[in-house]
Figure 1 (tube, one colour):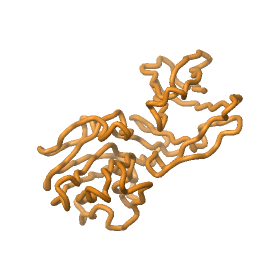
Figure 2 (cartoon, helix red, strand yellow):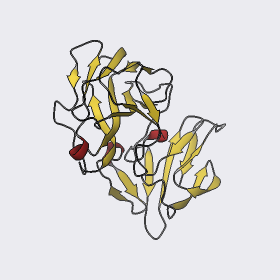
Figure 3 (cartoon, rainbow, N blue to C red):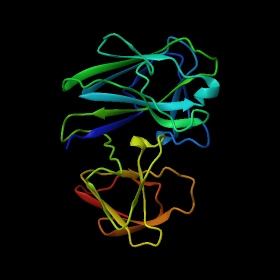
Length: 241
């Protein structure tokens, strides 16, 4: 299966022009990757990123576009004709009066497998508060093995669920999907992976009621489902909840 990589906005290989501001989450109610964001409040600010793969998607946050207006930017692959933000009218939000995170701001067409460069350039703001917020890239590598941080959605066939898990999701979650564990216990989910660290993301990181038991290769860990285990010393590991 082709690996999909996630590249956070803080990645040192991303090149930013002057004018970008770095911050945490846009609001207390949004869930930006690693709680970091790059923001532009002016025209002419650029992002450049070279990647190897077959497609790239730019994810960001839209801050109440009904009130503040949409951001204004263009996206270009390998110096081709720039595409204006949402010119295809494919961006759909759960509620345009609220702040929406994990929004796919741009997705490239299918590309030949190889080296490509994405350029993002901000344009004149339609409204002084219509900032452009960049959160992360998603890279379709076209390869079964690729170095970097692989992202796995809850519906991925490599995630094995036992019990009556309910399929849920809203537009402002990654791929618009989540899975809800059985209310009365008896459910488990297992993911086998080759690597040395992982992070389990929960769409409600501040919820104190989402406590569970986590197992890595037979070892129990107690704590919130929103957690990370870094520098794991084994490969071909098995993670269960």
